[in-house]
Amino acid sequence: MSELKKQEQSTFWQLSGKIAVVGLIILVVGCFFAEILPWIVGVVLGTVFTIVRLKMMQDSINKSVYMDSKKQASSYANFQFIMRQMLCIIVLGVAVVVPWINPIGAVLPMFGMSLAAHWQSWVDSRKPKDPNAKYEEWDDDETEEDDEEWDRWETYNLKAKRKLDKLKKQDEE
Image (tube, rainbow, N blue to C red):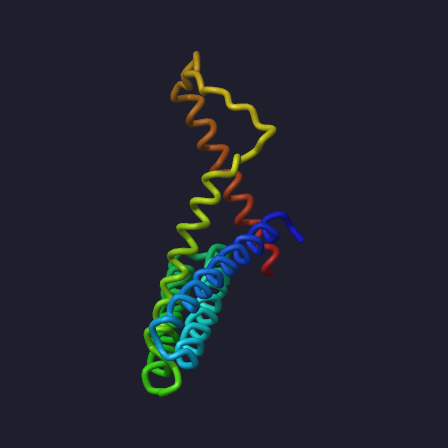
């Protein structure tokens, strides 16, 4: 498995664990204020849906990033967003209609994704990025690139992009 895939899976599991912890806290605190069985069912429903929504979001982002066209990727991401919101409406509708599910218990864990993201951000900011990396301040370059050097690199990049596009087109055929 590639390093990027491992990191993506790790991030998903870290956020899922944090969402589950937030759901557990909501579950325990709410048991003191609401009827226990409907509260438990509502919180479990909301927590599971939030984790499913996180997985759907991850899959949507991964797929749209590798699409060829920006417009196609944008349309796909917007469609997936609308689907996630429709599923949210359906879950909340079920929680309101079914009498043995507490709707507030289903809604509160949906905020768990935001809390988990802030929690993860806080944890990541406390970790050193790379303990072996040595920080070096970036000094100003002594020499500036002149226009001719810049044009040469720009031309090189354009040629490399055309070559890459040509190779992709040949692979498709």
